Amino acid sequence: MSKQDKQYNKRMEELQLELIGLNRWLQRSGKRLAVIFEGRDAAGKGGTIKRITERMDTRGYRVAALGKPDEVEAKQWYFQRYVAHLPTAGEFVLFDRSWYNRAVIEPLMGFCTDAQYEAFLDAVPAFEKLLTDDGIILLKYWLTVDQKEQEKRFADRAKDPLKRWKLSPVDLASRTKYAQLGHLRDTMIERTHASSAPWFLVDFNDQKRGRINLIQHLLEQVPRHETPTPAVKLKPLKGKPKRERVTEKALWVPNAFSD
Image 1 (cartoon, rainbow, N blue to C red):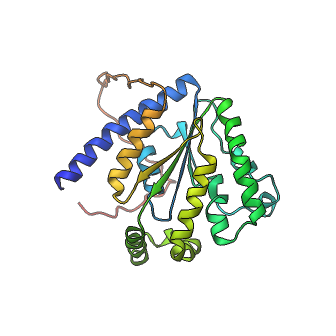
Image 2 (tube, helix red, strand yellow; image 1 turned 90 degrees about the horizontal axis):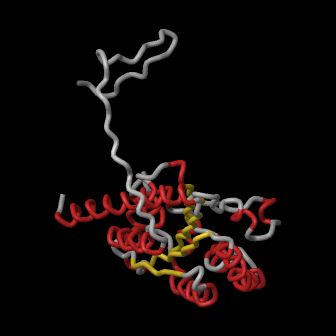
Image 3 (cartoon, rainbow, N blue to C red; image 1 turned 90 degrees about the vertical axis):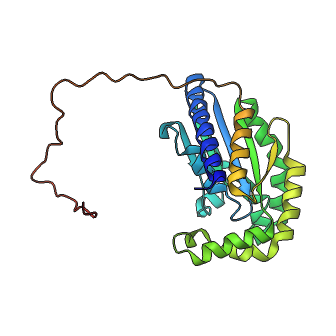
């Protein structure tokens, strides 16, 4: 392992320990935290969300990664299906893409009309003000990646069967629209950035550095949450340790590894 990788792992472990404290603080205080992760395809949204949550109590967070709306959802108020995923008291919700699909992906791919696009941009500030006025802490991150680096990641996904599922038809169709997507992003930020619901840009050309910077920044945006995990002292067991009881009617799973 390189020195750089060791430094990354050490810093990530420190930040994940702080995230556990954040999770405990949310649960104790009843505060609600919603964080939106947006960015170009292959920017690193999923990997960052995984690093944030992998050490957390699974009961204290949810990841909202909504797919294409069904026939019923398509006829609802646009924000309706996202409202159902907002955090409740003591909860942390991470949106892997969000209602901002209508600001970038949908107009880029022709999935919405110009009128729907403009109506969305007009409505977002008021919608998000309702959320923050009600006490939800809302943070919005855009993960930036240059086209050359994005193409390298696409090529890596295309040749790796374990990653190929990440390349959706929309991803492939949007490859040639890098500049257009950038213009849509700029318009989105110009019209939806607010002090109560700000946009933050994070350089993700180096994914490891981007993850560290984003997580550290996220922790700095939340009110003080120093809630250290209390030490636990295990008392010695009495008697001889027991073996797992075997039930005859249950079937053993064969051992795939020989000793």
